[in-house]
Image 1 (tube, helix red, strand yellow):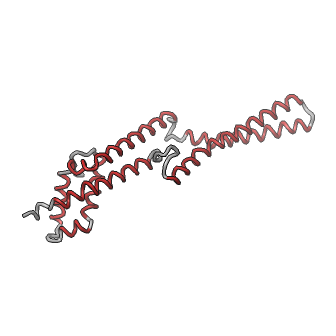
Image 2 (cartoon, rainbow, N blue to C red; image 1 turned 180 degrees about the vertical axis):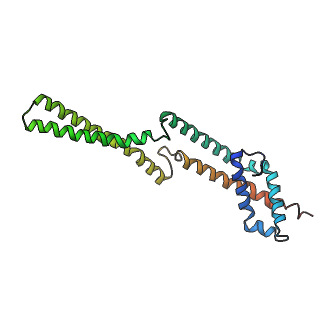
Image 3 (tube, rainbow, N blue to C red; image 1 turned 30 degrees about the vertical axis):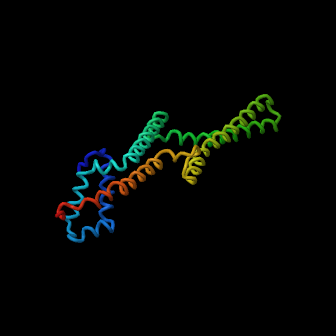
Length: 206
């Protein structure tokens, strides 16, 4: 890939993609009809790449916002991986799913034993203890199931509204992609297109 000056390596592909998109627009293609050759398009493409630092400056605010959102998302991802370091980060989801299942099964067994002992009038103190333990586990099942459902429900609400509960954009990949697209749009409209319209390719220059 071309070594585009003034851009981070991971953002060169975005710049070149926007540049190719701009070169394919009707008014830019019409300007090249005088000599519609690969050499002419390539010349204009090379000119724009050489002026990448000047062009990207037009969308510097959006680029700065994009980098800030991306850095925040990477930091959040790092914190989550440190908090749940096992495997690919699947420890917490596994616990959320398994805890209510295990607690519910244990609660059912203890309640059956406890009430069975009550009905049989056998060891009332032990039966009361078993029954109490069963109800504690039943309550644990309800609480852990609620905790497990809370995260997907909040995510669904955020995605539906397009914003977080605090009025900010959603966390993670959605926010990063949104900032990236905003920056690409600004780069196209305020950077690449004005440059191409005001700089004819050298092969066509008088």
